Length: 81
Image (tube, rainbow, N blue to C red; front, side, top):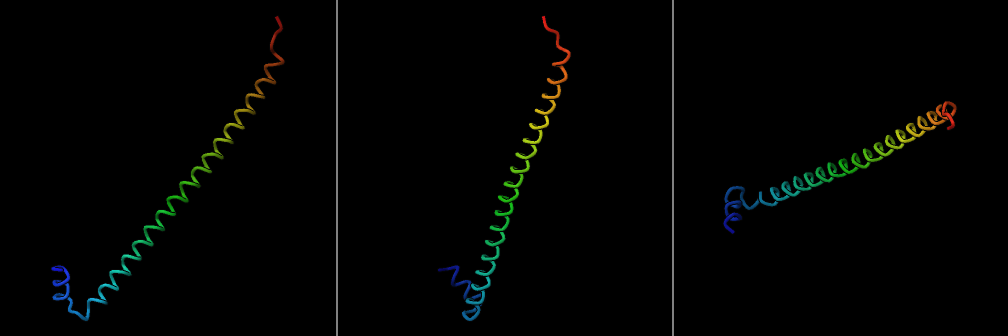
């Protein structure tokens, strides 16, 4: 009650709705901005995981190719005992 009384004294009864409207718009824009930031962070983390998965799969494929080539090459040099 005391804070409301001080607000009426400072701004006047006519200005209180305008001040409240301005505060509401400010809070709404702040909420929208925070939601945008959250969605961008989620989006970038999802993209990062996809890139990591693709890179990991590419590396595994290359390792498999190299292993196969080594086995093909070493097969012709191995001696039977």
